[in-house]
Image 1 (cartoon, rainbow, N blue to C red):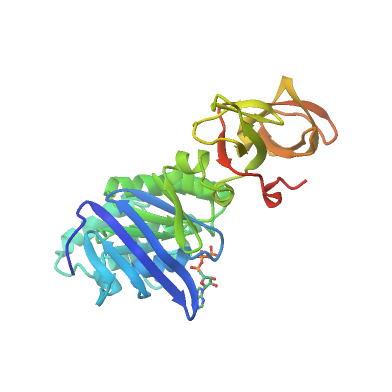
Image 2 (spheres, rainbow, N blue to C red; image 1 turned 45 degrees about the vertical axis):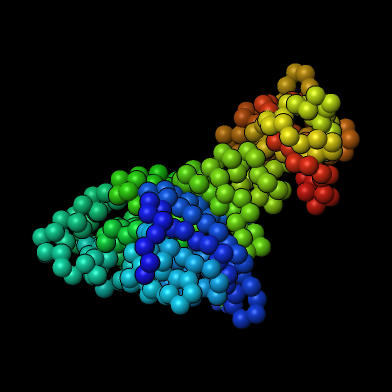
Length: 360
Ligand SMILES: Nc1ncnc2c1ncn2[C@@H]1O[C@H](COP(=O)(O)OP(=O)(O)OP(=O)(O)O)[C@@H](O)[C@H]1O
């Protein structure tokens, strides 16, 4: 093992991997600082789980290198086995040992730490169970726990040996919505208090945006954009990335001579960032589109009441449609409304492709 890149939990350079002759990852670069939480998002089949398997040491890269906690674990002739990589894994459905109690499962995470005195091991297990909010259940068996409780135990087990990196593979996928949102915050807090770096693979963009400090968007075997949750949500590099992170409508526009506004079917809109010119595609997130007294005429095509807001599809006079999420909107399909855009907008060079238009 070669020591380098101190201060970084993970460094991945030029990672290449395929199953048989089908390439999955192709020159993937990624880095994650100690204590950071990186969410990896991408469409189904783009290679997220494959990336986790390569980091965990379940697969061997065909190109590139992987460093974990500053140590090269894969690359060239180096290949460090899973148990010596200092990674903790939280799979989709806890995968707890059914014959071990909660405390037994967490203590199993300390298997490698054989030199730790018995009292210290017990103290570590107690500390972790407290941290994950299950101090009173050390003697329960996994079958006696809810799905959310099982995931808490799986997290405690992964954290037990103080790994350099925790891999979270869709850890909340099998849980109901309310449990998911409670657990998001709880897991984040636990990772923070342990100072553990974590890589989270998820299909749920709200999970990625709310939990991570950095988000990496995968496409065609590479990271096509990496940034803070706000950067990737507000300023995606292309429509595919925009769609990964939430609903998006695209309107054609022309940047005005001054370069700081763009003319669209919804009027002249302020550009969040100068730098694009000519014909552009303007991104509208649903919460940017509001109904007002003034504004552009539109017809409500669809209205779906979701409690906190009503999700609308609005048809503009030129036939384009935009999506909106409006709190308290009491409108029905066929109603005429007026539409305004709140705040500055993000634009990409080029024309709106037919496939990127909001389906009617
Ligand atoms: N063991 C395997 N043998 C052959 N092909 C595989 C194997 N595992 C995965 N693949 C293929 O590799 C590609 C990447 O799979 P992977 O599971 O990494 O994607 P993913 O992004 O995690 O997908 P999802 O979001 O649906 O879980 C897919 O096209 C998949 O069909």
